[in-house]
Every structure is written in structure tokens, then in C-alpha cells.
Length: 199
Image (tube, rainbow, N blue to C red; front, side, top):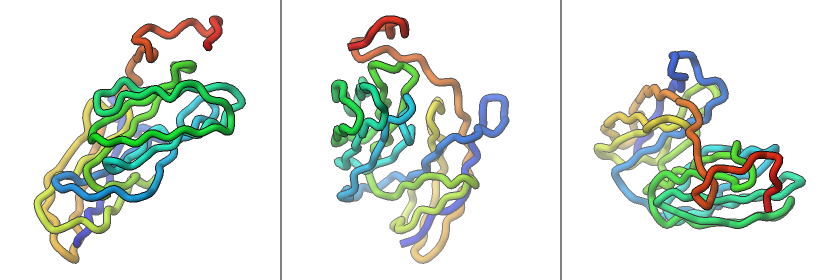
């Protein structure tokens, strides 16, 4: 196999660096079986941590609640609609993701909470380092497409690559992060005002 290595620059619409933005790079064009790992998106400080996760088709994601109050986890995204209901501190629920695609996840209680799960066809994906660099090992030789994605991007950016056995293929990508899009609650309605209690 070969490697795909390089760098990703994430910027705001004005061209300035998007400080603290998480990015994931992945290779598509072939399928692999999932691993046994379970990814984790924790609920902590009224945030999903991390807010961007990549998994392989049929892998699971766990959603532990680390806050001292109730949270809900739901998605209305086409590849995987689900509602885990509300659960307390110390509790965790899991969901498997059998279809590829982008799954946006929210909390029905706290509208500021948002995360994205990339459900990918193979295991050739990685999180970009704080320095913007990445390396994906174990890529089979062939002609593939490499994508880079960050939350709030309108779409991922991509580049065609030709991977050769025993060699590094170098790619540099730049992706623009936009504003957090508005979303509705799990009932398809606007969120209530914070002064109104949630059940």
C-alpha cells in the first residue's frame, strides 16, 4: 500500500485562519469492512466533544452525557435519522450507522449544541493535526479522490490522486468554514425560548 500525506488549510470566508477548527481528510473510491471500534462524541459543557467525527459504514458512535443535567441526541439527516431520547449525567447511548453520508447531530434541549458524523466507505480517514498536517496509511494503489471537510463548510474540497505502493502521495487542500446553519428541533419546530422548561 501507499500513503496520502499533506496539509489542510481551514479559513473563514474573509480568508483568515479558522482558529481551532477541526478537519478530517478521507479517501474514497473503494470499500473496506468496518473496525470494531466505537467512536465517542461526549456531551460536556453544553457542547458535543469532539464536534466532528469520521467512522466507517456500520461502525458505532457512543454519546456519553458528562454534564450534570439532561441532554438529548437526535438527527434528521437522511443517511441516519434517530432520536436517543433524553438521558442523565453518567449515562451513555450508542447508535450504529449502516449508510454512508453526512449526519448532523443536535440536542433537542440545547440548540447551541451541534456535531457532524462523516460515515465513510472505508477506514482511510484521519483527523488533521493542530499544525494542519495529516497522513493516511494503508491506501491501496489506484486512482482515488481525497476529500477534506470541516464543520460548517458548504461542501468538502477534493483532489484526484494516484497512489503507488510504497510511496507517499502529497496533497494540499484548502477549505472554507462558514457560519453555523440554523436548525429546527427534533419535531421540526423552532426551539423554545430558554426561559421555557424542556421536558
